Image (cartoon, rainbow over the protein chains, first blue to last red):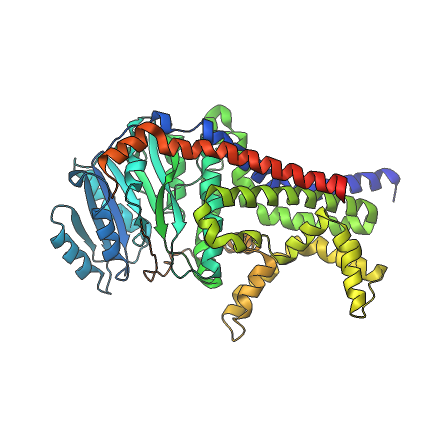
Length: 498
Length: 45
């Protein structure tokens, strides 16, 4: 091979390895902006503002939770005469209609039962049925779209509506927290993930002035904004909340995250439940990415929505599996070409990983101490046990260079150069292989070996599990597989004191 | 339930604003942690 070709090959492969750090650098940038949120947020532009608010609750067989949700909504710290609850019952046959009728009788003029006899078309169609009726009347100044199982803290709505006092704001979302009691390992992982994806990431999106998605379970819209985007939510994608969010901003209004407005929700308790929910979200994101392909990195036309930071945040998440696979393949190729360079590139990549881990874990635990008390173990093991070992080894090389060989020799195993290189190659491919291990957790959960599922999730990491789901969503979208709304099962486990 | 007075206090005196402002100090703590890790990596190991 000519020397110049070799040099170009090594350079390109090293660049591909380091491309794997793009999601990490994006994460560091997001977390750096959170501090800025302390000095630059929308609170100074708010006032105590309580517009007539219509709450739309789409409900399909929600008997386990709907009564509690309505009771909670009617007891919010919000003027009674300014709040109405519309439950859009999507042809439920589990007792939901009877419960809602009873609540409508208990709270006359405040709770309304809207029945769809021909249901089953999904959440977006159900929402549109309610929106058509609500916007057809003059009463509502704002519309709050929620899920049937969410429990608002008493001041949450008021904390949200205050932002609508600024006419530039079109929509506001709250901080959805996992509130199941008892909470198993999966719910605790999700609890911590929501700190990173909402309490942290959405604050930084407030700073850059572009929001990726209003939480589907708590999205408040001004009437004007909702009418501007057509008076209905999108029915062509699986991510109607993301479409609504982006359309609101494309129309020139702001979308705000209010981290002090807390809403509790029940999230999936196993790998398959999470897979089903997140596959829907991820496929929705693929569809949204296609639909809004002209907004990314076009600041001159779409303002902050087309800004570099927002595009970086979006694609760092959306392309995460591609970055992981590219990094792994490039490391192995580099190893075959030049062992020394591969090791340097690997160390550089994982050193960035070390700093990202320290920043994301410590800051997230401090942002939400309540969740930290519950989910600190999941926070530590969020990257997975194996990645954590690599992180420790990168930060403290003697652990790998001396401690592990010493421990091995104590049990009679000698780690020679070949074994060391085999371990190194394993570490190189781990970024990709972790997604396979995470997928195995889903597979074994349906078998007699389901007790292994948590072990595999802790080994691969929750991030790898989410990346595996994203990868699965690309495959399903590429194959053009049928898209259908699959509801996440709720059992009414949410326990909230406030 | 939060009373109207409590709410006005929170709104006007900015309890929520203080929560947000505390993020600056928390970020400073995170920066210190990162510096400690970097120092350990460079000088100790």
